[in-house]
Image (cartoon, rainbow, N blue to C red; front, top):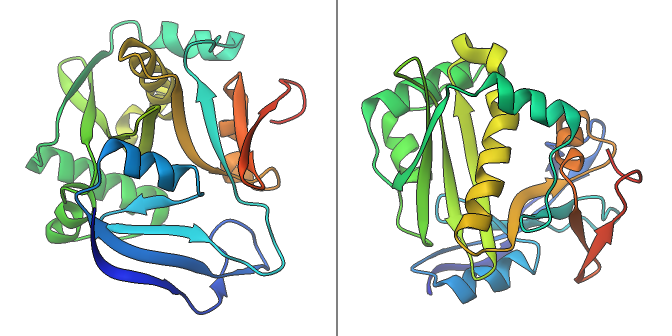
Length: 233
């Protein structure tokens, strides 16, 4: 691992997950991590975006808990099986990282329509195609047209979802849920037990969907703990 900037604490800012809450994060910048080094960071509550690794470091709140699904034991719910049937003709490909204009176009359209955000092509490449950890991408095709794509990192025990976006024209296919289902399946097919979904906060409406994939574990006070199916989500 090559450290480009040592860990520092950010100033307090508006929490991106909970209204009327502040947060601060610890972050550092690094590249060239191997599987074990990245696993260590996942087990210490870190996520990454580009070459920046970060974790919440709020003095009065411990609600952000990393969540991972056991890909070996995963069983789709009735509603998730409906999503699978809806996408029976959707073609999914996992391939090495390769930035393309059509990927960027979907990213821009998704960001603009869902989050009212803009991003340059330079930022897109820097955030998703900087060689930081072992990574690859997933691509989803409907009717021969690229409908969505995801960026995935690999650790010693699993796959970690960095980002997923889709063309809003294909919203009826529930591609966000379908991508999680496909990437859980891909984790198991690679002999990797876990699929890491990032942070989970029970009170956050944006994160409710993460608790619907079972069985899963939450990283709480330094250890991964299994969660009963009817206790979350």
